[in-house]
Length: 236
Image (tube, rainbow, N blue to C red; front, side, top):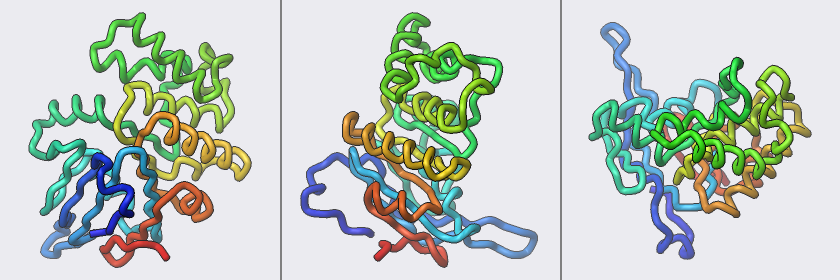
């Protein structure tokens, strides 16, 4: 278990991952992606997970988000063991407590920025006018107040990723999981996204867990952990 600084001991845990193992069966062989992974993430903390390609970083992120199940171990989000929930229960829980941002924004091309950001609210049953107001507010917060009616094809790469971040934040989640959020951006645009993440974390108190190859970004945002040989270790 990674030890937290003294100041964090009284901060609520958003993620509590204990002795998690993930294995896959390939014919007669069992492939272990990682074993005995433990991780605690507190409210308002940013944790970067680094490691070589194929180390299992995205698999770990999918486990934390309830998109995949561990072979052994327990993962609690905001005190709830998400893998004890039904599939529909996990979907509702994710929509309320977690946000997701990927390297490729996965915006729906036929919808505007505003409509894309409204989607999680609509899925959660929020009234359309309330969803629109909340989406407008978060898009303004990420600097896209003038781009509400633009479709993804009319936006730059950095703007599309800001829309994706707004969509992840619109339901005011406790934690946002990010898989290479700047991996498809140039250095200047990536720096803008990094600054945005830092600002939102400090303003909103949301935890961020980010998989990244960008060590500069990882070190600038917070705690850095390395996934190697199936183990999660503190980066020096």
